[in-house]
Image (cartoon, rainbow, N blue to C red; front, side, top):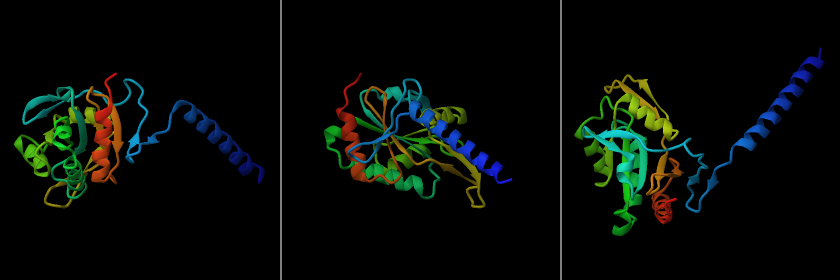
Length: 208
């Protein structure tokens, strides 16, 4: 009877080895950059890209900011802790840039809560952290599409608080090059120095 568990274990081991070899042959692991961010290998058409949302009711495309490095973050204005912390770090990083550098950067705060974050409320919230941050959102479908393009996740969660619901979401920050190409993911644990250094690296990139 002991032979059956041994056979199952051996089979699982072999399957694991085969799966690992397949994954290693089809995926290139992320590499750390000097600034501590993560540079993710991107297959053309598989990650990132342009999207259309709205700012205070007006259509806004990522490509509208061509010629600038875009600092992209997905969150929502009613977020109790993660979003304010991240936006404060982004703001502190932006303040480390020179006026010349800052003029070549566009921070975007994409709300994953279009039901509540509409009109000027979103922009007012975003600019509370830094006057250059633009707040954008869209229909639920448009926001979902933009988030999926950048590997961001969000999900509405019922809450007993006065807000009625909260939203669980990833807390990564994405840097987009001047020609609209995804460059780097900055994790939630980033620092203002990491933000500033990563932006400066992106500013040095030459369009393809």
